[in-house]
Image 1 (cartoon, rainbow, N blue to C red):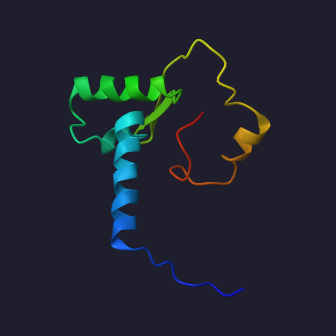
Image 2 (cartoon, rainbow, N blue to C red; image 1 turned 120 degrees about the horizontal axis):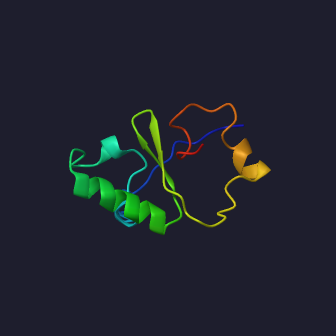
Image 3 (cartoon, rainbow, N blue to C red; image 1 turned 90 degrees about the vertical axis):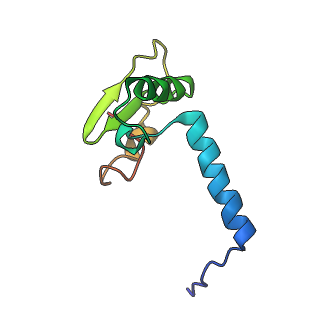
Length: 97
């Protein structure tokens, strides 16, 4: 199989970066140490709020996992979902127990 290098126009790169920033603004960051103001309690709570709103109940603080009880079934403990976490490194997949 022959691979060709991926070439993206600068407008495509800009759109991809803007999309990533928009997603981050909507769902927060998966590791609190990535927050711009990571020492701010308000930033910490706001990030948790954003992630909770998107049903992302797990968030790292470095190697520590923070969990917020959703008080509902999120179907994140199915066999298929759990298989994503087998044999991968810590930060390769989103935070999970």
